[in-house]
Image (cartoon, rainbow, N blue to C red; front, side, top):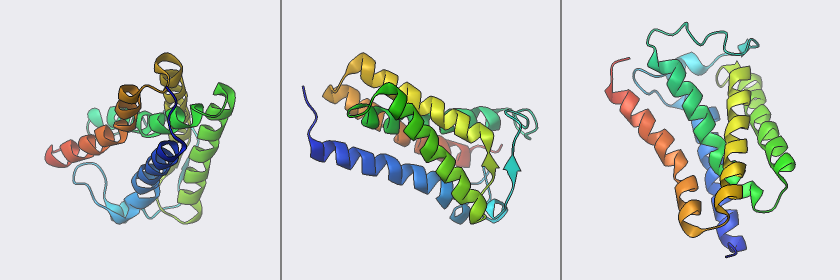
Length: 163
């Protein structure tokens, strides 16, 4: 089964919109227990991979950060893999993540973190792998594109839990 061009474009726009909202846009939103918008106005670069993984006040925060960054880019990898090779898909996902992180640094919109680039790239690769496993089946397409909703649900959950 072939996915229509219109659905692919809509899926790509949805994936990119969620990525932008949850990365560059987090400097405008406070989620209690997870992040404060006022703290996100910074120009900090974290170079050491997983260097701050165990420095959080609650053990779930780094796990949430890792899983959220991976899940956030899964739809992008899945959608891009419809038209690109695996290598091109992963490279474009890494580039998109690097551009997000560079934007955060340039405009002081959040912490620029090497972990985010690594985890986002992993998410892109997992999305591409999901396409390889499931192809363009409608149910697989729906499940993959639902992963940003899972990220948003985690945000909502963390806003209810005192971490």
